[in-house]
Length: 310
Image (cartoon, rainbow, N blue to C red; front, side, top):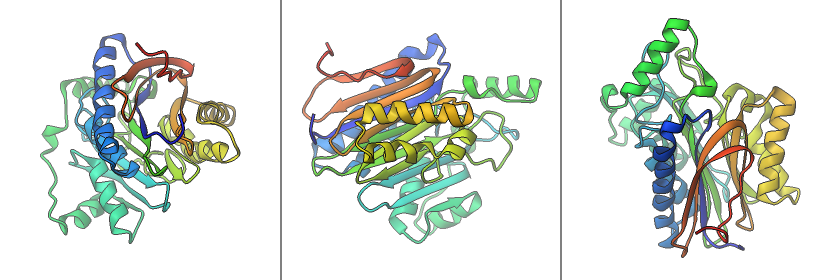
């Protein structure tokens, strides 16, 4: 498909109970449209992935922003990151509370350029200088999140596989620039201060001129395997995006036992996704094409087929 602008989003890999399938597909499709609006207006891939992730953070079906899982104190603590494949600019926030749109905070870190990662209360010290204020923590907590918290507290542990999905996006624009963004509430019933793979460069989020990748799954394993970077490196070795995604998840499984999914785009605009969990929510779209794909994919390679779409 050449360098036709395109975007691919994920709503997280895990179990995805059937009663949430319709909402997850709709949420992914809405995020694709938000990103496509940027690309079709001639905007940059970096802006497109942020727009898509913002839409996913606002959707309570996903584990990011509104509806994110709660830590052991009953709080939402978010991680988010964005990376520019052209400049290798990276901005991330970790263990930040009271943030309705964590991806906007990560973008502010990237744009500022002094640091690549801020965490905890330091995030708000930084963004208050720019006039931003934390939200009411109650805005973020849904009934579903409270129920999961009570269940986890009763057994004194979370359930990573059953957590609602981390969200992310990769895109390529008309100039051939790529970018990646990821946002998450992390692991349910996690210890306060726990930081996952999402805000760590190369673990859950990575982009270079060769391609971009965003991961979802067992964060500690993605960190040890540097799964997002490995996916991009595979594309740099000549693999098309679908093969790179499959290879990265196969390597994650071989090295750590697996437990996740990944989406990616290569420098030629090909989209790829793969997972080794039960399911992953995803959506994709191309500039100038009215069709938006959105589905709950089963374990394995994800078939992203615009030509076969109805």
